[in-house]
Length: 151
Image (cartoon, rainbow, N blue to C red; front, side):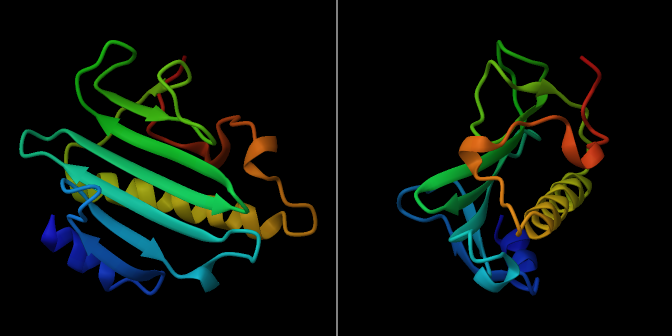
């Protein structure tokens, strides 16, 4: 986790990395540079929780004037989906999660996550004349996510 955190800290879009913060002692949290986002986004971060058995939870969140846009990539046994699944934005839940097929290598998973975040940021910048706030957002398989399996 520390190695991944140091790799995240080296990215130009990352402002800071917090290792195992008190409120989330099993995670590394990367906060993104505010200038990477338009003014409507107050803050953004990626939380990583990795387990030695290959399970993980990666949570991306944006804060918009008191509202939140969140999505999550998971690999763990559960009762709502396959082990690999994606919790769709803007408010992840078990009822809206989609089955997924993530690569075995965690570096490849992180690459997919960052590609999705990049597509999301581009979408937010493209909508600046009429931004779609989290309360107005509806996930419709944007970003052509290759890891989602067909319903």
